Length: 308
Image 1 (tube, helix red, strand yellow):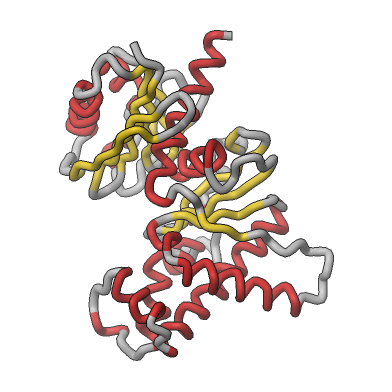
Image 2 (cartoon, rainbow, N blue to C red):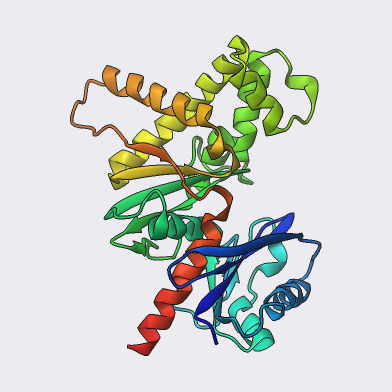
């Protein structure tokens, strides 16, 4: 049997998969629509993908939304985010039974951070942070090569950082998710162009305006970057990482990183408290596949620890 790992990143609309070597090189990758609405259906779908690579993998790693305790051998998912049907499901145990392979379950933001530590933007750092910008803001904190999980496996859940007191149901607009997620960027650019009532606009259109030097779109991007930089400064004060890497689909847009770095430089220059370090902000190197590398990295680490 090969020493490769089969990785899966479960999202609300798609299931990404990859074959990862022991050196954490992505050998193959693919994606299928996530049309499942039950845990049983998802287990069957993943087991089918693994079966297509039978005999060439020694373990399976799966990243999912929700909270996962690394010490839990059953791999129970709490919450599940948009995949609420995973809440309370022993996904690790069920997939292990279905595939006859050891299975590692990890939160998708933390998996992304692990992938960037293994071979990406956080490689060689002793303390680093990944911010994954999507509907919300996922990510993770890496310390000495391990995920900083906190007392309740909740460290790094940046989306829930609040801008207002908790009153009733959590709204995205009252948290970091609402001020720094993809929808916030879209809102700022459309507002600057006077097009808030335009309806749904994809990222390609927004960054086409930006990349063509549209003054209104650039102003909207700047307003968004100010919000993101405020949160990054707060994280720098709390965690003080060597590197903060920005991930998610829009991290592949050079204009985003340029705007954030430029805004941060201006903010730091105006701060009266000179002891606050200027954050080192970079783009994630693995963009949409970091989680696939990260769960393979974690699966390999746990397998190695079991052998010691």
